[in-house]
Amino acid sequence: MPDVSTILMITIVIGAIAAFAWPRYQLSRAVEEPFPEAWRKTLRKNFPVFRRMPTDLQLQLKTRIKQFIHEKEFIGCAGLEITDEIRVTVSASACMLLLNRDSDIMSDLKYILIYPDAFLVKRESLNPEGLPVEHRHGVLGESWDNGKVILSWDDVLKGNKDFNDGANVAIHEFAHQLDHASGATNGAPFLGDAVRSKRWANVLTEEYESLRQAAYRGDETLIDKYGTTNPAEFFAVVTETFFEMPKQMQAEHPALFTELKAYYKVDPSDWIS
Ligand SMILES: [Zn+2]
Image (tube, rainbow, N blue to C red; front, side, top):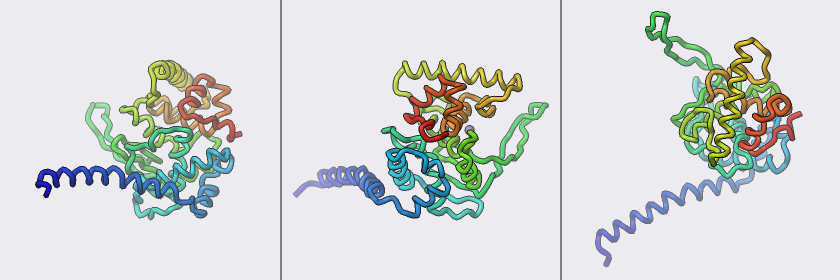
């Protein structure tokens, strides 16, 4: 008869195996399920760029969406009820950033909060006397380092409907999550090796400075001037431009386009005219 410590050890080992294996088993079951017809209709309606993508990327996107929906918790805010339509549409934007990659699917991201439309956030700033003052303003989306993305449903739909204007709040916020995966949200996502990181830093710093100067001069720019806020915002903004206006970016910012193409492992100019 085994003694108590042996039984305890066996119990711990079995528990550890179950804790590790059971979620993986559930995930593989979820991914092996066929992509529901209703979800496919949602993609066609709310994520029209899907129809233009090559077949192999469409298949990858559908697999990633199943995985994403299985792993993330969607929470409706301000009375919004979460539906499969919302889950599939929002997941499509996140998963578009993960094509052709072996990486996990934003493992630090746990919750996606969805408001019906633009939502108010409280912010503190210093008044001219240096005293903190609280104010509220409306935002379309936010990304937090503590595992949350917050989005306005109405603006997710608007961003996908016009997929050629370089503005897409869902792509923007999920790009912040990728940036955060390197340990700090600073415009330098994980690139794998020092040579690539150095080249990335050189190209993005130069482009960031040039956008700041263009903004200062009041010039028209392809990249939204919100990207001048800081390097993290610059990365999120140029990700929007890369996926929505790839041909223009390639023509006007070839070095930046090359870095983003290497990072995202796709060339959206193959399917965006
Ligand atoms: Zn941002």
